[in-house]
Amino acid sequence: MKIGKLLATLSAGFVMATGAGLPAAQAATTLTMSSWVSPTHFLTPEVFQPWIEDVKRVTEGRVDVRILPKPVGGPAQHWELARKGVADITWGNFTYEPDRFKAVWFSEMPFTGTNAEASSVALWETYEKYLAGKPAFEGVVMLGVGLFGGGQIHHGSKNIIEPDDLKNQKVRMGGPIQKRLLEDLGAVPVAGPGPKAYELLESGVVDASLHTIESVINFRVEGKLKHHTIVPGGFYDASFFIVINEGKWNKLSEADRKAIMSVSGEKLSRLWGQRFDVQNKAGEAKLRGEGHNFSEPSKALFERIGAVRQRMLADWAAEGPSYGVDKPMEMLEFFEQRYKAHAGK
Image (cartoon, rainbow, N blue to C red):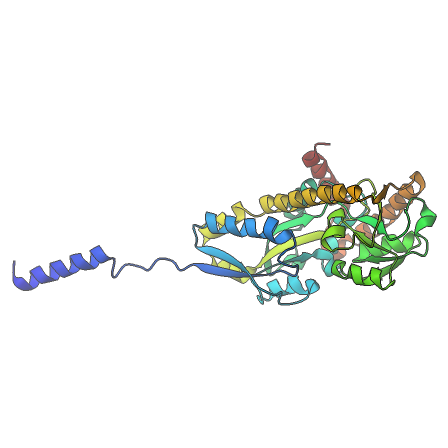
């Protein structure tokens, strides 16, 4: 063999041995997530971080998610922030934009259920069957949904048992379902996000506030709210989304998209509900241990709540074509059946 050919052969072998000239390993993708609750709020360490770890694990490190140190907008802006790509991933309450997401109003009505795991998974199944692909949800990919296991009535100075107990009481609330409920029951709704509850109670602007049991503690208002009316099935609920910008999603490989969905969807929705169930149970035990007053509505008040629910559902169903659902009551029935199946009822 000529010297020139020998050197060329040796050179080629060296290149192959060192990996030079081969395609570079795929660079890791870091997705940004905007979250509007404190890093110490249980959602961060108990829902978001475990999911982020799952994403990294199933993509073998090719995809990571970084929660931004500060939210890039207010809570009500978070759907749009993801849709426009200001942040890659966001989460929020559907009824922060009530008109856009009227299709999911059914899930926030009274008596939705106090098993957050069951209701969250049922909502995911309902979304997939009836709502995925509807215009209102365009521009993002749904990673998970959730409910919080029934919000209740919490008062600063008295038990709410009879219908008259709510009359003219100023109650902090959020969203159109809660507003309609309170108005029809004779109370005075005062709009304000949950984190503002302490300020509104401290200043005397409101007499009571609507919360899950856990948020009485997590929003630090247990010193202001000593009377808790627990409505069987929940007085109301709140529906949440976790989404990723569609363009960013499509840039991920098909394998990574499939891997991420294996730890999202039903699994992420279930994790959301499970953690709310744990928090609500622990919260109630803590408040009872501190001597708080717990009561249930009288038959008259419970029936009044039920009557308001029926009126709201009828009005909501009548508008089905406007939000793209031909058979809204069929959708509600499906959700209720799936809830009962998951709750073991």
